[in-house]
Length: 334
Length: 255
Ligand SMILES: Nc1ncnc2c1ncn2[C@@H]1O[C@H](COP(=O)(O)OP(=O)(O)O)[C@@H](O)[C@H]1O
Ligand SMILES: [Mg+2]
Image (cartoon, rainbow over the protein chains, first blue to last red):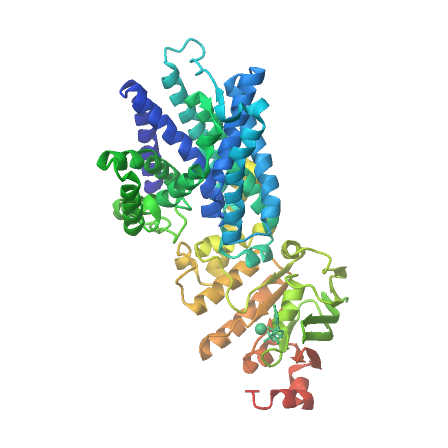
């Protein structure tokens, strides 16, 4: 399969490029890229829920916060090595997300959006309330982990590679999940939940599980951010974070795996550009960017890239005498 | 031989409307049974009870002697009851092939964890799902459309996709809700012939709701007639056609 080979080659090239960045970028730029990967993991989680499964969340910042605090408290209180706190944060968010997903089954569309939004509103205040554990408004100051095994890497370089590795693993797992039997069922529920049930899909269980997995991804992202920033405070996890993640998800491409990465670049860099363009009204500029992106790329950046990719590979694929690989599905791209 | 499906005293009310009132009938294994009646007679409501989308106010449904009503809707497919919908209920963003592959959900097992880890047996299961789905597409002459999203295909084609999807779960009882609606004259009889072919090659029992009398009468061994939620007649097509109640119910309709 020509197109599949081309895709694998492309992925490897991107990965090789990503591995070179720490040796050419400044510490600050490197930090920004690490943050992009963290956002990408969080957005992939959100995409699974909102894009693939059709459950709206305006509150994923809450799971990001829970992940960050689980990691920070474990490090700060119990001196657990940061590496262990990341999977623990994922598992705790999986459980919290699943439990939140159960009652959320009764809510559809905008009502679910509002319920998750209230989660995003509540979490920073709850964090402040349990001051003894969370350090209240002051937050928790952490120390940046050093590279293990005497690797000749600065802490920033090491965290970059760690985040990249977690991203690669989680994207591999996520792509597998979304591509197979479970992934089809997840999209089938979004498309028509009544006939999905008639096909034998336990949609209540699936929706709760997707909520859990989605929260786990976002929680792992939060846990990584705790180490990378070496600081957690309630106000960095306000409602604005939740909205930002949703913006990244939509702009990148809602039901799309690669879209999570494009969306992460957007929310990391475009606000900065807007700031560069106009110090006085950066959010107005950002808004213009948003509208232009949505207008030019109705299926997100991933949708646009996918279309170009198909155009580039189609002639070769046809020569090989095969169907032009999944002509882009209306909303579901990979 | 015991009937494959027994409907007993089934009653469904929506507020003041009585959609079904004490309806009882049996379907024998291997039969094609026509379920007819004017619009609003309660045919779709009956299907929705069988697939557990509605919970009847009274009555019982037995499938191979087992009560169906205590089960949740998602357990019906694995029992061996498949269905199509009167107003298409496909997954529009999935491709035709993927739609049929979802039809195999109840005949496959892999879960979240095994899918995410891409365990070797998951790959084998996926290959089996795809091969079965492709066979069905071939059978229903849909192979060329395998990679096309369901959205945007002509109505008649989508009806065939739904039929393929319902067959994917290897049902022993197939509920078809107006499979010929919206089709032209030739297509209607083609679908009739297809239903007979499917029954013959797949050892199926079919419960067929259809407005096209010519087709129903031609393919059914038995016909059950509903009117305003009541069963008014039951018998062979010839018997039913002569039945004065049926003639009265259809007065003014194309009988
Ligand atoms: N979900 C529902 N809520 C309220 N009334 C319904 C519902 N489903 C069906 N009905 C009513 O039940 C009666 C039977 O409808 P239906 O089973 O769709 O008839 P048919 O399929 O024979 O045309 C109609 O009067 C219809 O309006
Ligand atoms: Mg009907």
